[in-house]
Length: 172
Image (cartoon, rainbow, N blue to C red; front, top):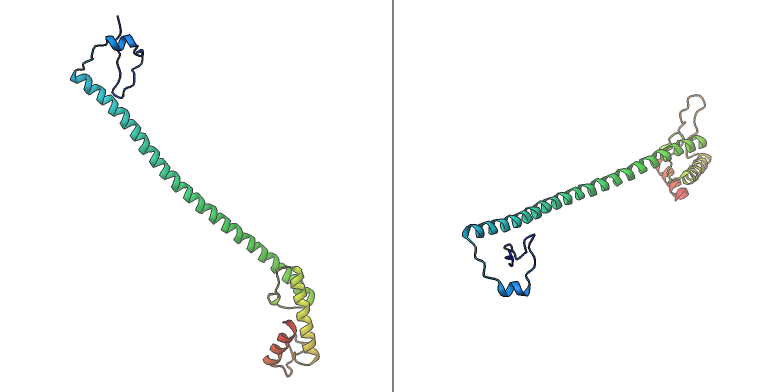
């Protein structure tokens, strides 16, 4: 007695069934289905398809969420890098400020903010050049000497133009 082969709606053989043999195919009688069986087969098939589609929609939603998170992460990393660079720059400026104070004290300069340079050597060289300019200007009577009693400068015949010319000719 040969078993009837049953396949589901998508042509897949149901579990527990064997593959048809040549004898089975030749001896097979056409299988007829009741409306209830057809409805059940179609419902099962549609259920499987809906399950696949819902998985697809869920994966699509997760992919969109992942893309949003990646974008936010990228922006956060860029902001982090920017803040690191700003912190490094602030630390460098703090170090330069300390160097300016030290060099200014060494050369007798009251205002360290007038010193420029990107490292200790440049700042020191600038301070030395600046002091040479003032020494030359003092020797020519362009810049006033400080009073020993008051610490105030005694005005001499200096003018802004004389000072500007002296700075221009010496520093540049």
